[in-house]
Image (cartoon, rainbow over all chains, first blue to last red; front, side, top):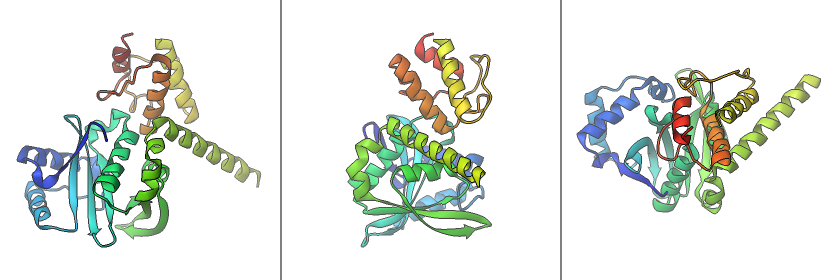
Length: 197
Length: 74
């Protein structure tokens, strides 16, 4: 969490809000969203204004030091069960930061340690393999599939207690690479064995 | 050291079933020209750090081979 800060959208100035709208409309971001439409200025401002009144959703702008790096949000917040659906993206101009494990570790720490959620679930497009692998690495279990606008999404859930027990190991990029390497090896073995049949 | 960077990039490309390269230029973009993914950039970081003790992504973005050379002062 060191160096990372999470600023609630309702506390952002107009200039930053507009920067977020531009990033949200970037084709790389839109293609992984449920709503793939371009968001107009009016819609975006209306959305932020509604957030101020909302108790079941929240959005944060993530900074590393002074550098804006991504966005994380919660919707359908259930304060009784202490769970919510989460979503996340790295700003388009920050994709070459090579720091996604550190960043996601900070996000989960913020959600589970600071905000005190017990579990977070999300839906990822089945074609978004890198994000599915990242979720698996962060301890998610996978559930049902759902279709939306002709695309398939798979549900995943991460339990706070499990993450917090292992956060130091999980946050280590070398452990992620080891995990990835093992996964690649398993994939190669699977292909080899499938070819034998 | 530049040769070592090429070697690392080629090893990562090979593991992704991409052909190895005879040379890279400072203008080469890591993603678009060399075909590296986010996960590959993570591996590149660690491999370079192992060789040099320098975290190339420590204070920002790296887009091109030239920016890696700059970080490493080579």
